[in-house]
Length: 133
Image 1 (cartoon, one colour):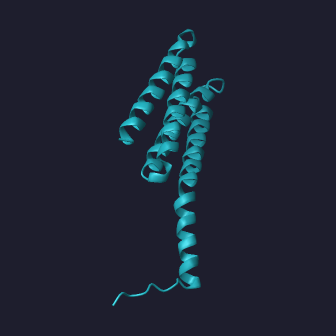
Image 2 (tube, rainbow, N blue to C red; image 1 turned 30 degrees about the vertical axis):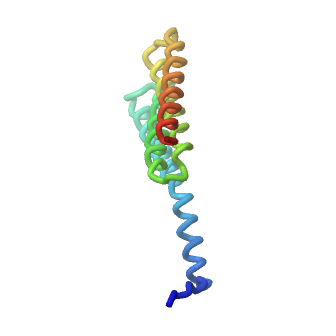
């Protein structure tokens, strides 16, 4: 005989909603935690004189780009967030490029950022195309 599935109890339903909530909102907590760590480290380094106050934002852009890439790798593990994570990788690469350009005075090389964006879009399109086969 086929066994009938019983409707979940109120407690089981509440537990499932709780688990779904934490699966969905765990990634923003990781992003926020990494962002606070980055700010704390940069402000500490600036206060200690390892980086200057007028240039800390350049390091912040590079760090934010790295955080976006790390966050996207974490999100990529969930299938429902895969498309969203590719966009964050592109944004992370762009921020790292901008921060590095200002940090090393290669502002005249800014057209290379467009090349990097084009390569990232191209790679993303090829990757999505290969996933849809």
